[in-house]
Image (tube, rainbow over all chains, first blue to last red; front, side, top):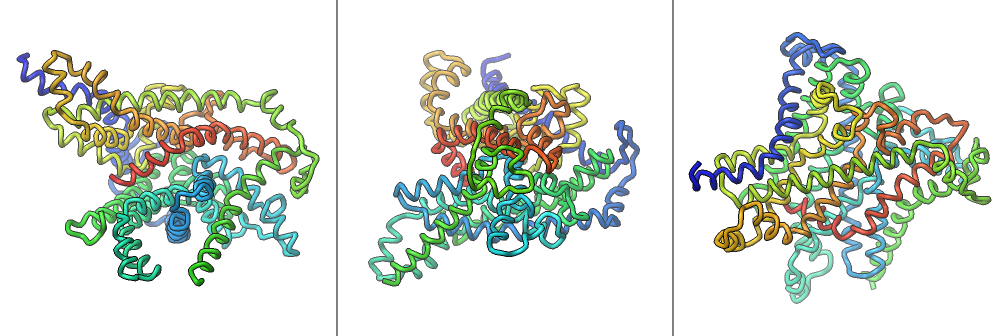
Length: 293
Length: 274
């Protein structure tokens, strides 16, 4: 091989090890999953082509629809309050004092826990007979609420658990966004005698537009995949009231071993998440947009 | 004056929020310090003494928790080490060398940012079954190596390093691998540590893949082990012990968090600036 040709391909050798695993363990399964969704596959992996049969079956499956509706409801219950709380915390804690640093640490601390520990903790916060909230309710003289066994309370309970778990990361993103606002914009506003409220609505909020969209989209994509909280706290119950789309796919695949059917559900969810991701790019990636960079 | 009062209300709310954040953690800690029998039907007993360390002693005595801790450590450290090597090599290639299909391959890697794990998990499960990799450390580690974010992160970082460094070393007759190893890599230590912490946290807390891949309790990671313990839990026994397991399992990750707080924040902020 001549020297220039060798130099041209050298780079390939550097990226090849990663690409090998990437193509084998991510891209190949991604394509295979699409193929799975067009087949009826049994426990032993033997399958036959059914075209869009799995998708047609999904459309007629009330359990699937319930899981999709639950997923959308719980996402809507989580994302707006989570975004608002994270923004408020970032605004309050964006200062260089020791107290603010400690509080930032406290609000981020739950985010380093695994979903298993979070659900273990919240099971005994939410349980009416042995839980922290139950004890608080009892000491106030009320009857404890059965958060995890009441159809109308279970999704709010999962949302509350998830907000407690996830508030730290968006808070950090907002703090990073606040750090990037040039200080002289505030100085100019102060010279003009702008009020705090005007400064907030005219400078701070518009400058955080990109971060806000990012937080909303990342959280939406994450919550559409909500799984552990639902599986561990309630196993999707009572009577399916907290079964999410990923739990549905998990049960179809590893409970009933309907791999093709579960793959079709996975593709539906995948498309929903891709739409959210593309929405983010359409929203913030607009060239010549008015957002601060 | 009005601003003063607003500031006061805001701080009161923040402190209330901090109490809400901490209460479940303190509650868990208190439960873990109680004799199991005392908690039966009366978890309120956690609010007063006597407290005991017997639940923690039980972890070291009889339970499998230590084995799961070891598995989690092996998988997380293994994943982190491999990710650093693969992503640094790939980052160097994409950022500083030219080769056929470089742009298309980079776009292909970026596509991975939008692929959620549930879209690939069933074929992955089948692939690993074919390769007889379930219930093994490689089986638990390999899916973690497909991180598009890691490659993207290292590529961005290495792009910012002046190209003259490579050219000068090339003139001195150094090989590409040598330039990568002794010229560029030492300059990427901040990025390496941020990516390492990020990867370690993600791997340590992963529940989805080990739940499916590790089916023998010997090969459980802490997340799966605690999930199993939680599901098998009967309301009549062992609440204190269960909570002691939760506390015990969170200690390593809190230590990592406290030591690497700065890197975590930098990695997360970096992830946002893409």
